[in-house]
Image 1: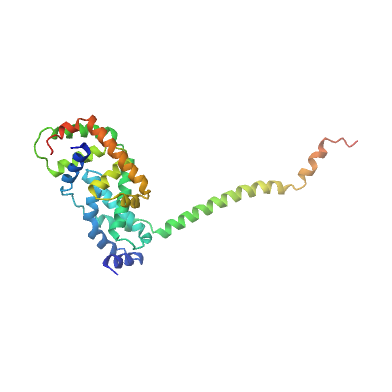
Image 2: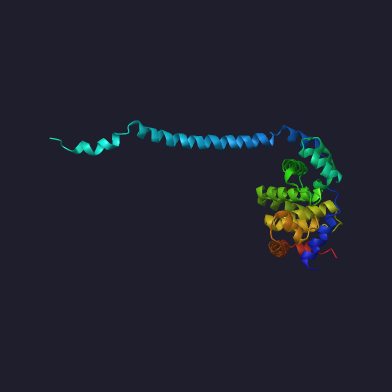
Length: 85
Length: 186
């Protein structure tokens, strides 16, 4: 007999094994009820993304503000090296 | 509308306690399936629990086209597969295998649980995907279409894996002198 057939034969015998039965209903219910609600998780993700987007906007805004604070500064730079007299 | 559909509808509308009835109805059948993924009772119990918890949080995605148990088995199979992938099995299995094969040479009739242990250890020497295909075929009587459906693989891929798994299993068994040890089985 081919070895695979023998292994399949063993597997057939193994099917007669009485598998243990686990009663997990209480623990499942406890785990399910202690888990945060799906809405809160979604809200958390949304909040996190909002904070991230706000941070990016803040960084860009600060850089822009530094330029805007001295609007004529860039215009004066080329004139610094010119001798007026 | 059958009982399952009534309970599922109740859970979706916020009655979590209705889920208890579903767990109690299917926990034995799921224990049987998850027992094929581990021989450790504590681990198996945890896996069964994980199946029902994951099913609870995905209950809205159950469309009711197939029986609920079929949907649970899909989740169970994927959890078992993930468990195998996470498990660092190689070191542990070699020693267990050597120890267990002692019972093969004794030529006494083996108990089904001993046989199951040996087949489990033998399959554990395959890659995770190969092992899954043969485990489902041998122990859950799944055909290639059912395995493909449960795992989201193509049917051709499952057929190829099954063929490859059998070839590898043959080599493993031959290298381990399994043929001689099983010689008493007609």
